[in-house]
Amino acid sequence: MKAKIILNPYANRWRAQNQQELVGQVCRNAGLDFDLSITTGPRNGSKEAQAAVSNGYDLVIAAGGDGTVSEVVNGLIAVSGDGPTHPLGILPIGTGNDFNDMSGLPRDLKEAADIIAAGQSRSVDAGRVTIDGTDHYFDNNCALAMEPMVTIENIQIKRLSGNIRYVVATLKALLKLSAWNMNFTWDDGHYAGPIYLLSICNSQRTGGIFNMAPHARMDDGLFDFVFVPEVPKSKVISLVPRLLNGSHIGDPDVTHGRTTKLSVESQPGTPLHADGEVMAEAAHRLQYQILPGKITLLSPA
Image (cartoon, rainbow, N blue to C red; front, top):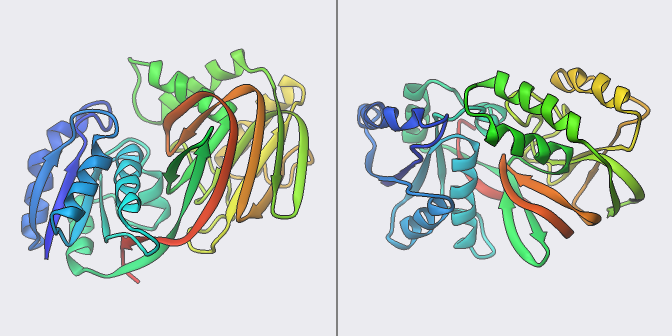
């Protein structure tokens, strides 16, 4: 089988560019026959994944972090039609690696390459979000309001790396936080009013450290969603450390549910991120739909 490796040199703040030789070495040692492409800018990973399928590669490997995996997933879904995607492998050389970790895949590159070479796969869900009429896909998490504010702050921080960057970004976002008036519905519920946080989750963790939806599963055909209405800022601050261990679930000011779809209207327009990448800074109308078993993930059964 022939593999296409798509490596994002920017992952982990350009540290991934120094991993190219190691990525090639572990893949050769695992017995993989592969070609390697280096992405050159935003969305390039999606185009490379689509081209790999068109050019007859048997599997596609994302070498990077959550943003890289998400771009490759978008490309694979774009050419999958009504069926599952081409097989996806992951070599985790990013910062948070949420999707990799929550899938139960190893961080060690040798172990990851061996799993890819073994060829076993399982099906996991994906999500589709339609942002003011434009479709985008995600594998791990897609959030509105406060959470993408943290992502925006995180991008702007230059001197820190790793999980501490997410903590500092969260504190900076809290200082700027104001509520959005949202009207949203899900399978069996509805909410209208000012909110601070709305997170739509396919897995438990987001941002590398936040256990946003501790009961989420990637293969149950459902989103887990979490939202917090406008509450005193002191309550928001008290909830942030509880996001680390998932104990915010069950708090009377936190609503958690499961659904196959959501419809959201926001005034003013809300920022939005998907798998850690900012998709919009002021989206007004959004539609979410779960895509059960859409991703073919190379993973032990």
